[in-house]
Length: 270
Image (cartoon, rainbow, N blue to C red; front, side, top):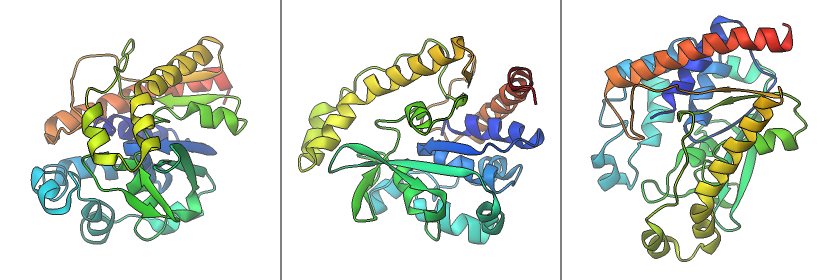
């Protein structure tokens, strides 16, 4: 749910008429970026206002009934068809290259899905958002998939691999934040002992996060990246469903995104 900060940043990009030619996204970022690419300003904010407190969106009831804290069928199918229209036609027309990352549970590597694969049930995005223990694995493209944020929480290494020279990085943690190792190792082992590479990836997650943030910060010092992230204040948990707190977080993202647009125009001369 902290990903609604990035949704606010995307709103600022839309206000400025900025559409990036390349986006690599994982987890909540992979979901929230969809409305940015389709050009639907305000859509993610309406999700917060109208839907996040709905138990069909996020609840223990979902976890008991469907083994998933988030009801992804509701989020990706019911919401667009019955509550908040998603402009699939415009999404398809935009020429941005979008890569959505999800973890292959058998080999412990991030798999990247191109924009043209995001159709119908948006399975790659659902996989990228699916949290071990709190969501079932997603079977797609003959793979068992989980949260793309496990090994590529800040997918800047993928952006570098794809030859991009300048990187705009959106984080949802404050400066100085360091991720610690998970304390649930025995629980993960009991749940996923058939998937040793998945267990390894989960154990490595904190190292991947800290390494990728350090890389982004180094590139920013070199003038090759711009990091946008919360500067402090409001604390929002990963599973927050209070609309007031999430709207404040979204609006913080919009403010920080607008400030970043000015920096981008200065750095890149556009």
